[in-house]
Length: 181
Image 1 (cartoon, rainbow, N blue to C red):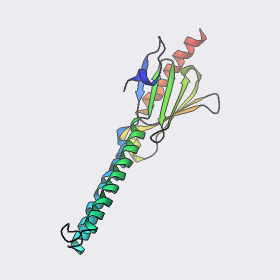
Image 2 (cartoon, rainbow, N blue to C red):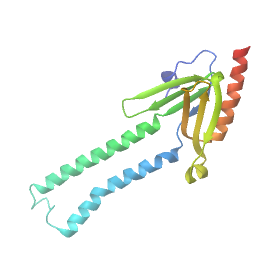
Image 3 (cartoon, one colour):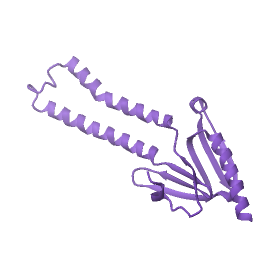
Image 4 (cartoon, rainbow, N blue to C red):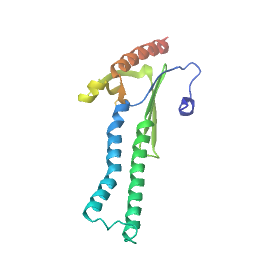
């Protein structure tokens, strides 16, 4: 992915971090996808064991094509579900430069929200790590707040949130010095 297609960099701006969600956070969606892929196979095996001739292509002229069509529609829906979940996972990006933060949040297939915040406006950076897996795999949310009540950017499920928090505070201090001089 080319960053210059997503944001228009200023001449003095340098990208410090390109953040995405931790890959382990996609694992539940992947496991659900695998489970959904196995459902028609299990149903076929059950029907074939209980009623051996009902899905035989030679004896069943209507039921076999109908079952094949139904399984194809089901698999298409399952693949669409997986694609939808992957697009939301992959296209959520947070770009931290030496001047600003750009948050790109994908909502569905056809909706995207892009917001940005100047680093010198940052008032508070909070890390939230909830649960067993986030603690073990070292990922969590980084909440960035400004003095304004309605401006808040959240990096969701990013790796090493404490390091990112410290880097954001340092970048914010440097940018504040640059803007005050």
